[in-house]
Image 1 (cartoon, rainbow, N blue to C red):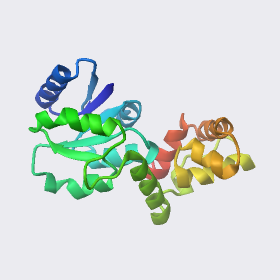
Image 2 (cartoon, rainbow, N blue to C red):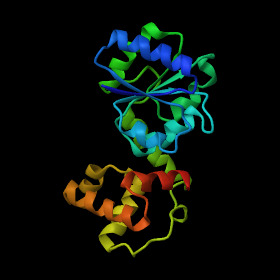
Image 3 (tube, helix red, strand yellow):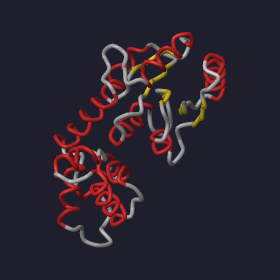
Image 4 (cartoon, rainbow, N blue to C red):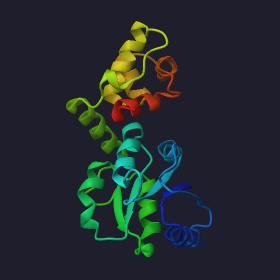
Length: 215
């Protein structure tokens, strides 16, 4: 299991990491401070994310929302050293699967096991349901607008235009887009890669990030 811990307090990161390794010797833990330029991309490639709430320059809930907009499977467990009520509503809306106080180390292994198997704490949505809700909210509120993207290097083909429009609804879920278009997922992934290349953003998930964040 590859666990990504985003924690700007080195002592807290060391304490949590040491405890989890004692409980799960097979776990691989990679720690970030939260100010890395590619923090969302690194979290996207992990099996689970432990996310501190009080980060700089972006808060834990802000990073969680960015990740959940492009990712429908990696669970996020929020962590805080203050009363959970302070962040509960915000991190739930941002698409996390749970929230715990850092001092509750004894509860972390079981929660991690629950989350990596597709579960969620009471009151939280699964990663897939949270992803769907955030993408729908983006479309309803107008967050996902074309003007947030850089200029195209070449025009999109009609098929790419349809794929792009569906990315605003389904994010980077190639299977859902393929089902809507009546095509294979591999064909849709090809269209998505072309869109990303023409916008110069590297990957389809970066297209969704730009739609969400406007940068």
